[in-house]
Amino acid sequence: MSSGHPVTVIVGDEELLVERAVSDAVARAAGSGVAAGGSPENGPDVHDVAGVDLTAGELTGLTAPSLFGGDCVVVVRAAQDAGKDVTAEILRLAGSPPPDVTLIITHAGGAKNKAMLASLAGAHRVDCPAIKRFGDRMDFLRGEFARAGRKADEGGLRALLDAVGNDLRELAAACSQLAADTTGVIGQQTVARYYRGRAEATGFSVADRACEGSLTPALEQLRWALATGTSPVLISSALASGLRTLGLVGSVGRGLNSNALAAELGMPSWKIDKARQQLRGWNAAGLAAAHAAVAEADAQVKGEAASAGYALERAITTIVACRNGAGV
Image (cartoon, rainbow, N blue to C red):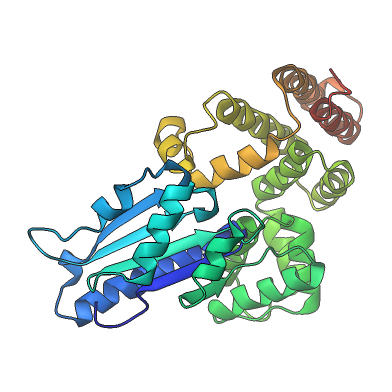
């Protein structure tokens, strides 16, 4: 390839940002191939592999010259999990990549296999650190709206965080939706009006916090959702859906990557990754007890309870307790 970076190292564990960085790097590699005389229809072969799944010699085989020529892009994900022999093979290839090969490596950036990063110091590096602080999330939202050519004021940004939560994928999707469906500067009233008509999004935010075991945020999201007109039935449905997803993902082998499971389970790979994170702290007995609590709450919000809000609060409290083992 005549332009672009032959080796790119993407460092960090913020999944959305890593995914974007990988996509950008692959797109640049494809563009470089076109610039060198190829065509979009005959773009480079792209091999997307997990470091933990590679065996010694496999990477060399993937990057070997083809009888038919053409460029090759190899994405090695979570390279910190690669074995000793595969790590050495990655470093050899990165040190002297063939002219028609682009190598894209992702590394979580922690202590595991840290020496690999030092050996890749000469490669093009993209950092994707975790976004944890409130101020960083606000900056992320500003950037998302700027990408869409829109602007939101401080009240709008805070209201969006309250409505959607902290998951970057959900925040990015919310920014995209608001940018497409509204006009003018996006403020608090705009966000509240938009999400009042889209109750399912708020319900799933409540469910996510509950499934993660975050009791206070889950109850705060519940009260906000009810205050802005979200139907209790939709919140109950979202809780049930979240637990079903945990059950489905938890029933399959943890060694399988999310892309392989996506077609089998009928859900996007990012949702599988999120469920796997939420599954920490859960066991089969806890999930069964949580399902029973949600079934009871569902009956109550459909007419058996004097206060649907109270019934949902009890269900969320039980879900969190079941996750930690106290409710089983």
